[in-house]
Amino acid sequence: MSNKRTDADYATSAVDRAGRKSNLSMFMVMLGFTFFSASMWVGQQLADGLNFTDFLWALLLGGLILAAYTGSLGYIGAESGLSLDMLARRSFGEKGSWLPSAMISFTQIGWFGVGLAMFAIPVAKEFLHLEVTPETMPWQGYLLVAIAGVLMTASAYFGIKSLTIISYIAVPAVAILGTVAMIMAVRQGDAGLVEQFSKGTKGLGVIAGAGLVVGSFVSGGTATPNFTRFAKNAKVGLWTTVVAFFIGNSLMFFFGAVSSIYAGGNDIFEVMLNLNLFYLAVFVLGLNIWTTNDNALYSAGLGLSNIFGLSKKAMVLIAGVIGTVAAVWLYWNFVGWLNVLNCTLPPVGIILILSYFLNRKAYLEDKVVIRKVNWFAVAGVVLGAVVANLVHWGFASINGMVVAAICYLAGQHLCKK
Image (cartoon, rainbow, N blue to C red; front, side, top):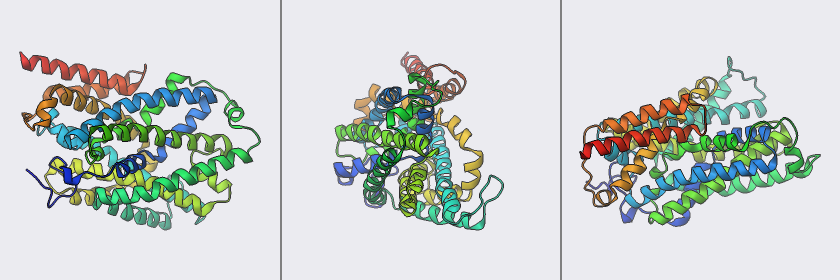
């Protein structure tokens, strides 16, 4: 089935040659995808718990693990041209794919709502001088949420072309202005970067720090095929993903770390405020959140489309309304739960990877036999999620992936017999 004439986002089919994007466009989209404000919170935790050398080692180790995971998914998405949900249909089954689709949709709608509040609340406090607490949110704050929700939903609604345009605007602006602000903060501080990092109690450790790096974006990274399927070829999908994740994540961690040690906050927004760059701070904060939020909502729309059989555009609108209405509540009540749910998505990703490389020829020839439900894949995700959340040793996401992989491979072995 080909939807290329009516569906520019190929929600239910592989992206054909005509739908592929330029290398620069793919790099911008993937880099914008990694510009995730919540990653700055992790940067703050890393700065609090590590000296500068260990901070760099944690970034490198965590980045390598994250790059291997997302790079594999990026390669698969580009070579097959299939979205996460269409890959899940082949590995989890037609109805079994509803589980990963529901999981990615639920988490991405949640982070979309949190992102809206992460923009609206600080702007309401600093620009409108409003008092915002978990119990009270003035109507002006809700208006900011609504305006941001409409704009970010619109870019996801119009699909990959709109996401690309936003990325071309936001990526250079955030990277350049954020880096300049970070350098200015260091120069105006009373101590150098290495010395400032050494202050305070440093009890985190490199391995634990790398675990935070991996956990910061491993769930969102599971949606990588949704974007790399538009790459020219598999190699482009791989390198744009790996390079973008290293650069984008590292920038976010540095922004959060510098904010923490020089401004006492967790966001480059606060650094820019301290430098009397208020309007630029609002501009950078908005663009930074926008590049991740529209990607999140886009993935949610694809996932819901797979479950309900409706168009991606309709599902994006519904998801956008839900995320916008619930944004403030999600911000104050649900971030902890979303972090728990983050551990449920890596088991999905490892099963997609194993299924693809074990049956690569069938995927490329579109001859994969799609069953109703692959119960071993479903069990792998459920058990992997449980282990990831309950076993407090090593890397939570990797623990979950190992369990999911064992379940899936055992099922493959039994089915062959």
